Image 1 (cartoon, rainbow, N blue to C red):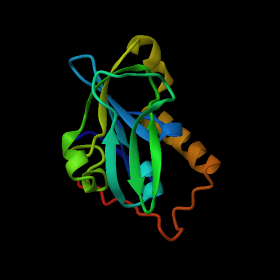
Image 2 (spheres, rainbow, N blue to C red; image 1 turned 30 degrees about the vertical axis):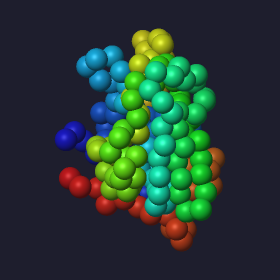
Image 3 (tube, rainbow, N blue to C red; image 1 turned 45 degrees about the vertical axis):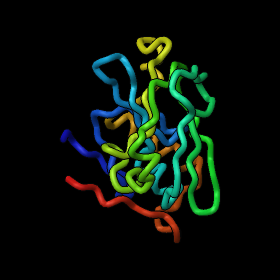
Length: 159
């Protein structure tokens, strides 16, 4: 495992890319697809996740449009893609065991894989490392995030 950066006790692996406004992380895969998952910050905001339903594989997803629905604490939210591309697959394990998202958001709890329309051009839209932490600090400010608020669940990172 690479370096883990932390912010308010939340872990952020330095090698991943982040889309802070979407509360997502991204990982480039050898086959050209990109894996997306909910970041530790997203998990802290949503709390316990009860269900995730991905849209069907083969659909073209536009940037800013939904790739699935996340259900949490008597509410639901569209998971919106930070990039355009074809939905390759939803994570079947997460659909059967949504608690994986909270327990292992950067590992087995990934959400979907997308084959981006233009990854070389789109990749520059995402941040990593210290740049990601700075962007997350700004997103938390915009969200009025209080890490001490009741209901905020900090993840216990397994190192």
